[in-house]
Length: 150
Picture 1 (cartoon, rainbow, N blue to C red):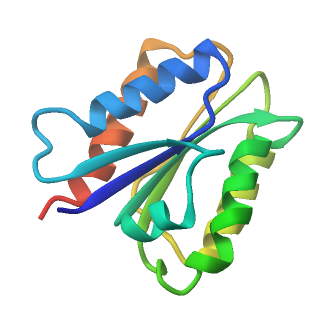
Picture 2 (picture 1 turned 30 degrees about the horizontal axis):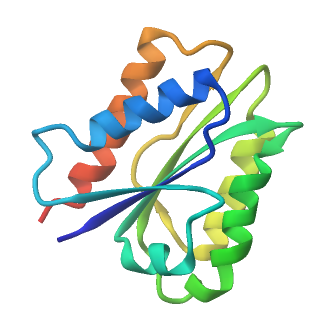
C-alpha cells in the first residue's frame, strides 16, 4: 500500500487548522489504498521518509524562514534519503504572520537537492486562514493522496 507521509510543525491554532484540513483531505473516503502517516517534524526519521511514497510538509514561517523543527527534519533525513527518494512527489503548506517567501524558497531549495518533484501547488497563508484557505489545504491533502492511489 502506498504511503503519504505528512511531516508538520504545528505550534499555533492557525497552522493547526491548516494541518487538520490537509489530513481531512488526505483521508477522505474517496481516497482508497493509501496509508496516511502523520509525524511531527521533530519526530520524523529517515526510516519514515524511506518508507513513504510521497510527502506533504507543513510549517510556520519564522523570522523569514521555515520553522527550526522542519529544518531539523531536513537536516536529519537529507543524506540518508538523498539517493533513495529522488523523483518522489511532494508539496507543502506554510502559515505566517506576514511574509512567507523566505520559507518557500528554503523548502524549495532543499527539496530540489533531494530531487523530489512538486505534485501539487503549495498553499501559503498569512494571517488567519480563511474558509478558502482551508479548502485549499483540504484539496492539497486530497490531491497528494490521490496521486499515490494504485
